[in-house]
Image 1 (cartoon, rainbow over the protein chains, first blue to last red):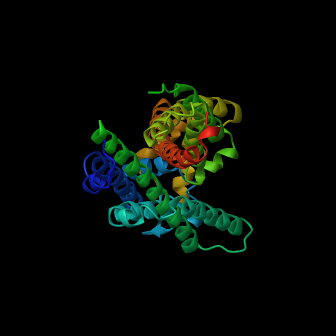
Image 2 (tube, each protein chain N blue to C red):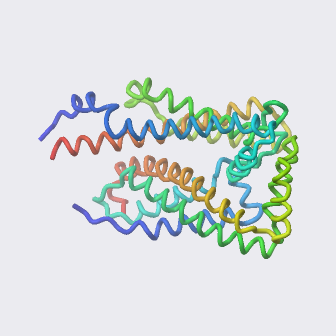
Image 3 (spheres, rainbow over the protein chains, first blue to last red):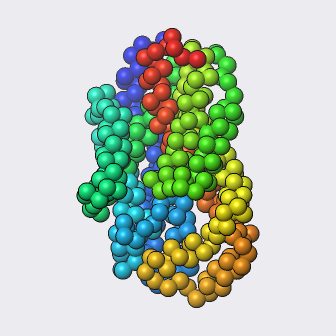
Length: 171
Length: 169
């Protein structure tokens, strides 16, 4: 019976199945974010694919041009908040391997996720009441949400994977 | 090893919630907040499953992810059917809506696309090609966001289950 799994954990921390899942998630998010940036450029050139992209992202966003950043005079395919969410999740995913070990035991990531949701709700309320409207603030709020969501998901997968590895070690 | 209950029922309920809330006018604007209903549908499936688990059974992140994924896929399928129903009742036309969105974005659409949009407009709401794309896009997007919802819910429920083992099940 292995009563001291810590050494095993140290060795298996970022190896095997987790790295495969991590690479797939990271690749998917990088492609998703690249599509956000590239679509307005394609649309400017009247690209057929850009029309499809705009339709694809209409499933996740209202695409209101007044609430979106612009590239080459074209509004992005998602609003400022969604842009922030996706870029935040990209930052979260790319920074995860560097900070995960340090934060794992102490960091209250679930609380931060709830704080990020509340920040976005507060921003929405302020915006609806016309008390404060700012594209940058909206994107920033979205970025915190995307960052912590990505962290939450990766932590969950990471811990799940480690538990599985420990079980494999015990058997 | 404790036998786990079926994942089908929670996933079907989660999928139904996704489909209903994503199809009903006004309510479906919730999805503009980063697919809120889709994420919540995945989370609901995970929550329902955790409630049906026996006290000594383990609720893993993998379970949450799978439940979220299934709920998202069911949600896309149910949503497509409900969407068709809504279109016939409420005279909705996604082709026309897309055209307007692209016009609002600031540029002309490609010339050859105008004929497609005219076709969509004439077909009274749902051109077969458009329906196929809509379903494919829904399947992709729902499966991504609903899985995220399932994983987050699983992560949160795991802690709750470990804190209150007597209340589980």
